Image (cartoon, rainbow, N blue to C red; front, side, top):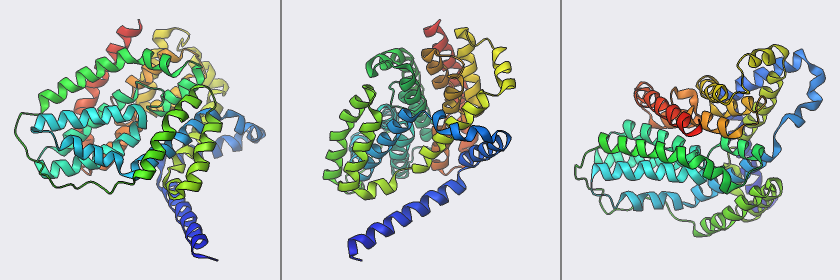
Amino acid sequence: MNLEEDFGRQLRFNALGKLLDGLRRDAVFLVLLGVLVLLSTLAPQKIIAYPSLVDWPTIAALTGLLTLTKALERSGALDRAGHWLTGRMATERGVALCLVLTAAMLSTVLTNDVALFVVVPLTLGVCRLTGLPATRLIILEALAVNAGSALTPIGNPQNLFLWQLSGVSFVEFTATMLPLVLVLMGVLLGLTYCLFTQRAIGLGDEDHSSTLDSGLMWVSLALYVPFVLATDLRYAGIAALVVLLIFLIFRRHVLAQVDWGLLLVFVLMFIDLRLVAGLAFVRDGMQTLGLEQARHLYFAAIGASQIISNVPAAIALAEYSNNWRVIAYGVNAGGFGLVVGSMANLIALRMSGDRRAWLEFHWYAIPFLGVAAACGYVLLF
């Protein structure tokens, strides 16, 4: 066995070990797996139909996006861009506004979770240098990625699912969500402006950013737009396969870093929620909610997000209504409020490393849920 083959085998072994270890620690995966085992025990005859319950175009689109965003992250380009932006801010308020706006903008194209993986470590470093309150800033960034990611079909998983379900174009979906996002970002930037002062700061001229892999960066950027266009034309499966093959040849270590566990969680989510939605007593209960009425559907989407998070809420409600616009407004507004409303909230607070952040988060997020719910209602009805 030559050195390259040995390295490839070790890379696959490490990636598999990391995946299994992550799944053992993932409470969401364990709950979904437990539900699947229970449902399979109660109705084993349905097991053969499980693959048909998965929305494979959504899984394919998510696979391609996770691969491309991981490649862009590993290239060091996002870290470089973040340091460049914050290094040109002269005041505490300027840095805060820059980081919050950067988080929101990145989330529109890199998904809300990936945007946090880029911005939060940068924020922690900047706060160590400047004395800015890291917890408060990270909470605002969590709100920012929830607001910003609502704009595009690829900003978050629930939008990606609803986009594939709706059959509308990328532009039409974005235009539909634009009014809500503009209002939410206006409120959030105003809040950030009020919470931070004009105190002068100095970040220094030293570059702490990572090394730039320009080849990986350009390949990622070159593939991004064609991938989105192909997905828009409903060729997500072929587009994802092409992306995976290119990185398998060009930079296979990127594939080892992709969060494959997240894809498995989504597969289980589709199967579990659609099996549960098919249960007679669940259908009878949902019928009493009057989901054929748009207002009822909107508030059901917000309420369900506060209980089971906004991605499962979108998948579940789509079983009872095809009004994707109302569901999209509801589940994106529902990402605020309780921390469980969006996975991005959990990621941000865990990365903050501050146990008090969990309480402080709700001081901002619950009122923001009220604002988002009211704005969405006015815009829809």
